[in-house]
Length: 464
Image 1 (cartoon, rainbow, N blue to C red):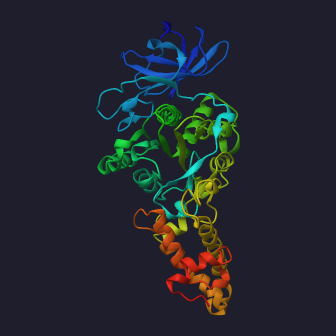
Image 2: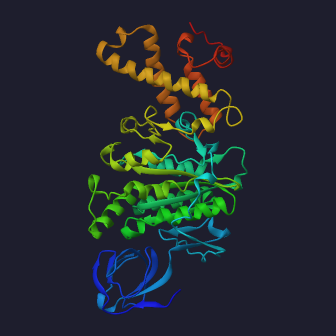
């Protein structure tokens, strides 16, 4: 740490978590600082913006008790780093990487910048291999691939917290040793009960032993929310690219992150863009999402499953809209399915995994998996169309084949989408083959004759 100190009188204004200072020392953007008040407690911060005369420091802890005349700022001479080591799994951290589970500090062996290190795109390897989450609508219809970034688009009040916890408990990389697949879980701006739910669920199930848990509560500083995913992803990069593990990073809720970004940007006096968010929202989100992937010559991988809530369930809102340009698909939750007590309420038709083809099929899951998923998607899309038509002419006005599609649609939502507990991919596929038996053989245009004979006709079901 460099002994550079701003003493009394340098502070010009304290606005929430932002400390405005005269620039009396040389400092760098994103440089780590310690802010100390009359109470003697050092608070972590960083230089957010600066010019020739002034600088703004983001204070990452409570500013209660700080007075400008008695505030001192010490500069570290380097950006914020996170000290990591082999004991990081099984631990609970706050939003800025400080241990909060009552245990000893991490025995650090490495220190990394929280912004992540630049990666040459040429060194990126294509995402491969299937990650099983235990959720049929993901595993069967929109498969998650190792090294992918696949967000979940939810809405206020929908059960995305329950889904996140379920995936953290049950996700696995098929073919890998259990100890080689680990979870980094980051909660951003969580209410007290949600934070307790995640920690209690992971502890009670024993899954915390393979998880690094980062919890930023709603009562914490808004500036701290901007760093929580960066500390978590730094831990994930260490586990993936230093220890050689396969990491699934679950980050919820990125909407709280974006709201904090808008709040802090407004405090800076920056010109707002769409919906009041800063014009650099796209590039800022990219600095998080693009940390997922695989690196040539490295054993480990980093897969991201970020969760965001769409304000007013608007998928065209800037947060999901910009996320869709960066990520490789999306899983969309539906309020209407949730009202009908369907869990998880995944809306299959607008959901998409662009890298699904790189992680399923022969050598990855099952040779018939791609064809089955395609047939189920096509049949369900037709069933939704038939529901609209039946609303106009009545079900009795439909042809026999169309009524079969109506039956298929109901069974698809009741048996594939809705599930009481985790399923293996094989269990999901068995259900898929079973519900396809309600359709005539002539409608199964996405399946080969051999697949129909093997999975449908062999069951003794007639397809007239």
